[in-house]
Image (cartoon, rainbow, N blue to C red; front, side):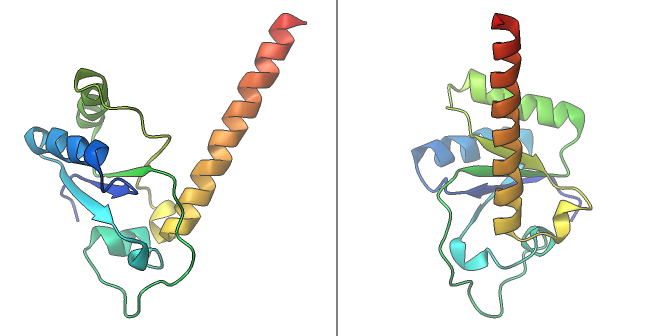
Length: 132
């Protein structure tokens, strides 16, 4: 479980292929997460476990990246690779932590979406304060 990797959601497309190619020289293993796996905890996904029964709920459509065991320099090189390779940004990104490792994919996506909305509201309020 100490190997650096990135879990990719809703990136089984050309953009995801570019991200996966970018990971190779960085020594990052890239893994696409399928909706059938959404019920597993993030720790279980990282460990390569498979669900006893596939998750059957409604999948989300947001693109999500989850970085695992990425040190500061590796994380920096990964994020710089997006600019260098002209890969459009992925809106929801996280790093695996002891707390979120117990969440499933849906919980991760919900929390990231809440954080993104809070940041958006905060930026809008800050802009309004500067204008007023």
